[in-house]
Length: 370
Image 1 (cartoon, rainbow, N blue to C red):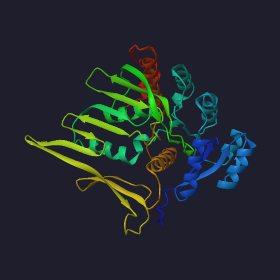
Image 2: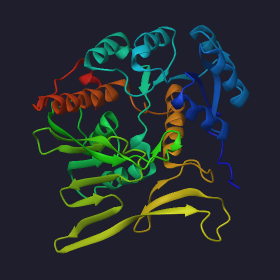
Image 3: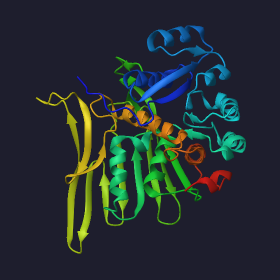
Image 4: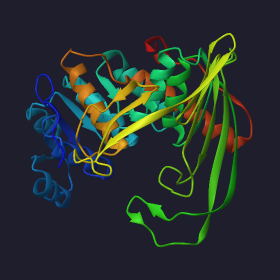
């Protein structure tokens, strides 16, 4: 049995939720499992069938309008609406004084991003639910970089997730902001069995044409990245997830770290995951921490809870958003960062479709980036 972690300072993060789809389901399940950390005050849905199911399974009231949603007194609103709907919804919520955590990507294309920024960018009230840098493994690798163990990072290779998520990781490790990037890309199609989808095991053992895209991002100053993604890779157990971070005095390859420690000594280490509940450990199956050479890099913020890495990252994002909304913590992932991720992602898509290199432009949100 898991041991609940301590309640959050100031009480659980109180958030209202827009939507009842797949992504909304994760937020609802996390709040149900982590009541000491998270609480859903209300859900906005115009689907009567979904509304009844949400109330029956999870408890929060379901409302049909934003006025009633905000009347439930959330600290912030999580919008899982698609970008097309968010284009009108996010400005409405911001105009009503709400703090917002919007689903990724914040805009379907670059013109939509520009319109959204023009309407709400100056408000500083919109964050975006980019959780991949908070994934425990990625958080541990980012800590290796922050401690300077592999020197200055120039190149990152991401083969694990799609487009804006992968760009977010490349930018997090390299420190890239609004610098123009030259993006070249190619897409190939090959047969692949896809035994798992969102619903679970498919039972399908036939190979289907599946596209893979490889893109090179070049900032022109020694920094850049390699994007390598195959459709279904995020869930497909027949394709591994890989991350390489190359620094001036070392390299991270997944959980392996090689680095120079003096003028003639190169050492190799492993990022070690400590998981409770293994063999005769009776603490419950949960992540404890990740460490390197006996030094903790990342500690699970929800100790004792049986959560996947994805769930830990999303729950941590919600808690950080509440701290920001209370004025007790930094912005977790501002709209400007997510808009830049999507700008580069759009360049990858365009370069792959046309076969021509694309150079990103400096956009209005550039001044709000680090």
